[in-house]
Length: 101
Image (cartoon, rainbow, N blue to C red; front, top):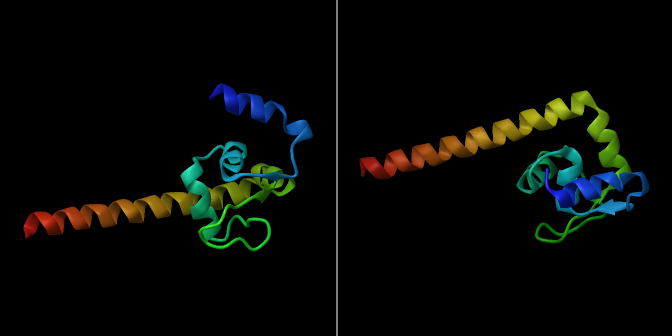
């Protein structure tokens, strides 16, 4: 764990009300690029109605509750596994089709 992450997580007793994508990933112990996947699969909801390419923020209280919910963590983990498995399969198929051509 990075020092910046450790320092941030130690401050969560007096956490800010909203967190950035990077901070949300730290709380959920996932990668920053996983957060859009969780939003896309409707397992995580950003605050307000940001445009698709806009900056997204997440409620700290909600993230802390989700981090304690074993069932939600299992659904999120499964969604991430399925996303990356499908993406890797598409990559393999594309490379095979290029090699066959």
